[in-house]
Image (cartoon, rainbow, N blue to C red; front, side, top):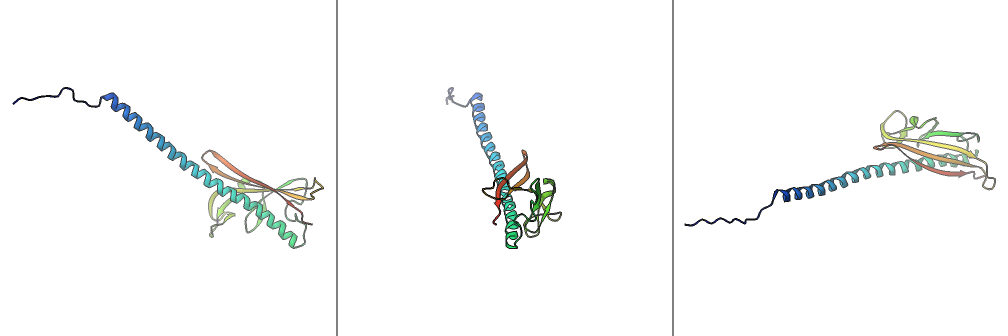
Length: 173
């Protein structure tokens, strides 16, 4: 009986294996990088959407006060910026309004019903809203108006982020 050995049996060399492992690891690193970036983008977009809605709500709360003043026959800026020489800052929620001086005092919390409110009770939302109201009486063609800026702040991975909405509310009389 004669035993024959094949001398030219092909196999992978060490260099080929290292190159294949390098290519596979680069692909996995790329995929993991996309996953991490997607998670970060979702978090940013979620917080930005919430801030947009909170900022718009701030504008609507000032509009509600202006409209109630109109219904009651009061001057349109009663309880808001009644003095033209300064900008007034407020913390508004759907229950009440109170003048404040900084955004730190305007932290928003979740109440028992899931609404964003100011105060010490409830779960912290991570957002704060500051509403600035200024009386504008410069342009006689359009009459007297309130310049309202609603600013929302929150902590993100990159530091403090903010979103602001600005509008003019005019006197209806």
